[in-house]
Image 1 (spheres, rainbow, N blue to C red):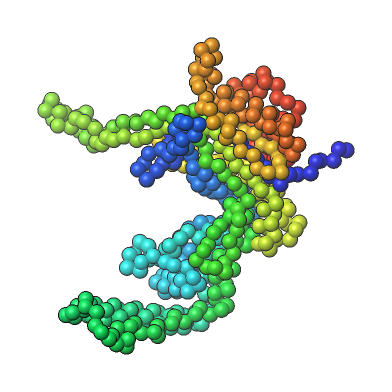
Image 2: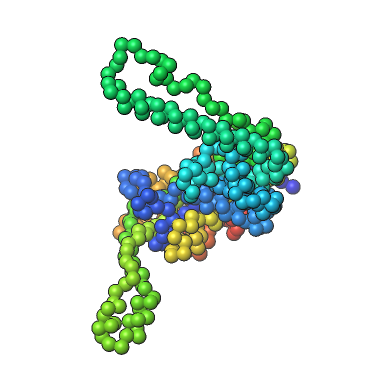
Length: 459
């Protein structure tokens, strides 16, 4: 029996896909995002949009009991952890809604998280930053608060009292400064200034620290622990210095069109059902004329094109993250293998959901996926630095952009792999019968294996 070759540190994924009349991601003005590459403008789908789509795809499959990660702990990225913990206190532990919310907000604020303006109801109980934590973090925080209710609530009242005194002292200092500035001749510098009369008090009202056991419980709840998607994609939480950050094991490039971009401004007219019903049932011409015209009109930007995108999985970093989170070596190895399979499936199947209903963008499948291992990441963006020129081959064009991009990508990989000894186990997958026929015509090298399922892209 032939022994399998050792696995390399990096799994590189490359994908060609064609999209028509979609808008997967947009800028602050509602316009498609773009970049300039090879001297021409290209449409772009940002790595942030891609990563979230892939992360949520894997999480939803796991939570639904499907895929390799079913039953594994996954993460949630939200500003609503205080609300989630309060809801748990209310529904599971029987607390009053207001009591639960003020308590969880105070506990998490004292742990180091900053919240929105308390005077603005919509953000008062939301953290200022998104916190990526295991999905059971809210339940864990609520359970601890319920177990130590008397201690936590006694601390809470002391905390609120100190906050009120601190705010009163702040207002007093602010009023004293305004009064001093308003005095006649305040803008003239006197020969001698009394420090005691102008300086702010050195003593400030100190907020009581959260009981150590409660703070430890909050930090443990928010810690990455065994959430597999946090180990994959990483997280950064600067507000609590002693809450561990995670260097992600996944690298994601911005997707871009292999050809020059062309943007379409789509004019639309939305019908008003009630108006059209009146017009349809009008008894004379004048009544019908009063109900003429659309209910609403406008423009939306749409893009079409063939995109190249790229991502990398660092297998060593993934296993390190899982081990640091507390997994034993055997369990970390098993979880890493499962995570790799789900990462590959999500890379192939997931798609940003912007305008998914009006453009059916999430129904697309890639024309080609190329996966291979190496001792370092490989990005083949340079294969498309010269934009694809669509047009008949007889007139100097490269034909349709999809097949042309596939030819370029495979030619580029074949060329590189002859010069790099570390590239191995290259596999390709296509969902396009034209590309499947093209692969047969090109006669891929022996080192390139054609597979029929996304999970087979990784050995």
